[in-house]
Length: 231
View 1 (cartoon, rainbow, N blue to C red):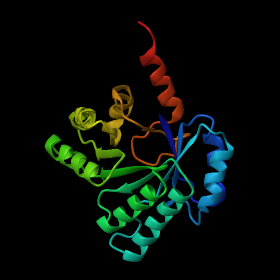
View 2 (spheres, one colour; view 1 turned 120 degrees about the horizontal axis):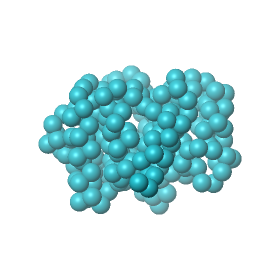
View 3 (cartoon, helix red, strand yellow; view 1 turned 180 degrees about the vertical axis):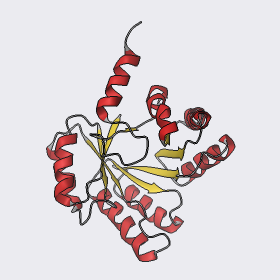
């Protein structure tokens, strides 16, 4: 599925970006850490007004590492999203366990209408496959419905290690989002959906990327069309 992150810096800009993205996205990610003074209820309503088929993912990345108040506030934002019945919320594996468990309990209390993505991002390197598999297992133990592992590719070979996690996901029968960031990681963004990665993150247009190496929706569609053609 195609996921378009909404990274506008204002609430009004985010509302416009949602309207522009809904026709081409399967999932719209609301990056509440980036949307300054974003009003979650209105943003979710805007997505839903665009059509019943578009799903909502709410993410709130840490903005002040180690600040307990900020951590509590961002988990409360995700819990609010759960209460509003969004399709997915994304929480980092590195989040304090008590806060992660609090979020998971909110999902269970509401009869699991929301799927929990437990994510790990390495913005500096791609560790060995053994380490990646350990991270995958930790995400599963943390209660993930969907595991997301994304690393920085310094070499083309780094892509192969991250894509190599797919066999672990198949054994555990759990959905996986896996690709590499950076210029060297673009090939993994193309290969991952062909190999069964759950979501592909693309931007609506150039300059709107939420991470290095991200393709636009136009670029991704052109490449997928070529790859899916009969010989």
